[in-house]
Length: 258
Image (cartoon, helix red, strand yellow):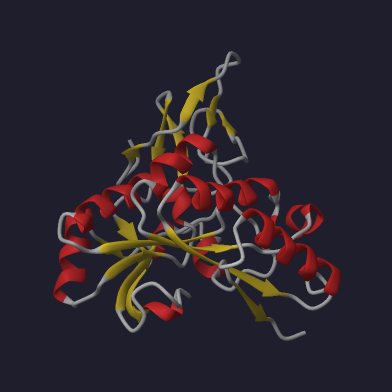
C-alpha cells in the first residue's frame, strides 16, 4: 500500500470493474492505480485510499477573520492547515501551488488528529480551520481531527467550495462548527468553464447548511472583472441568498484586480 495511505470512505465498485468515488460530483471512475481528479484519492487493491491522511502542507496561526469569518468568535485565533490537491480546477486559483500539487513531498508536516488538537490547545486557539486546499478531498482526516478537537473543547472550521455529494455532506458537516463557503459565481457557465465543476451542488450545500444543520456559515464571492461581476449576476446571486438563505445571511464580495 502507498506510504501514509488510509482506507477511504464514499466509493463503490462498478459492474465494469472500475471503482467510482462518491465523495464529490465528479464521480471519478478509476482503474487499479489511478487517482481521482483531486489527485489524493486513489484506487489500490480494489479499494479507495486517501494518500494524504495525517500529512499537511503547513500550519499557521491566524486571526479568525482571515478565513474569512467575521461573526464566529471574532478576535480569536485559529490554527489553520491544509493538505494537497483539490477537486476543482479554478483557473484563478490563488493557492495553486498547494491545490494543484502532484508532488507529495510538499507535505512536509506529519500530524495525527490528536497532535493537531493538542497544538491548537497549547497555542490558545479557539478553533482549527481546514483550509489552503479544500477539506472535502481529505474528509476522513478532517472529521477525525474534528473529533479530537471537540474532545478538548476546540471548534472546527471548514473553508470550502462546497462541492460534495449528499451522504458525505451529512457526515462532514455533522463534525463542523463553522464554514466559509466560496460561492464562486452565480452561473453554471462560469463554474463549468473556469472551475471544471457545476453550480448546483454548491447551492445544495448552502441550503443544506441553512435548513438542516446548526453550522455557522458565511459566504465569500471573489469578483473577477468581466467574468462574474455584472450587475445582473450579482443581483441574481443576492436575490437567491435572500430567498433561500434569509435576509440575515451576508455575502462578502471580494474584488480581484483586472
